[in-house]
Image 1 (tube, rainbow, N blue to C red):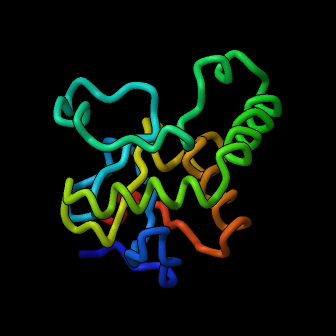
Image 2: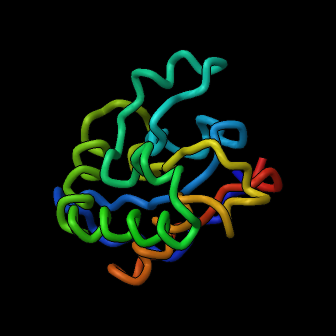
Length: 147
């Protein structure tokens, strides 16, 4: 597999060593890791995505999309802060230990934005930046080049 493992992940609440990644639905492949939905809707071309585990704290609300970019960021960050690292880590540990998909050691947080715009215009990269500041754990983006 061509996706490089970032620095070792922090142990999640259940003690499972899990590495987190982000990607778009179009760029994700099963070999990248277990899919985790962080969008309000899933793609029609992936009907199985309706049954994938969801990380609701990392999913923006509909109302954010009607706000300015600055207000969107403020509201999304406030949402993450309200949930907190521990609660999010517990949910990630639940997903990793649920046996939903293999390998559970790698969870990929998925949304719609292509990787070309994700760095500047996507909540999954905002989540990754917040996670890094909150935990010291880097979340790597899986891109087309990683295919």
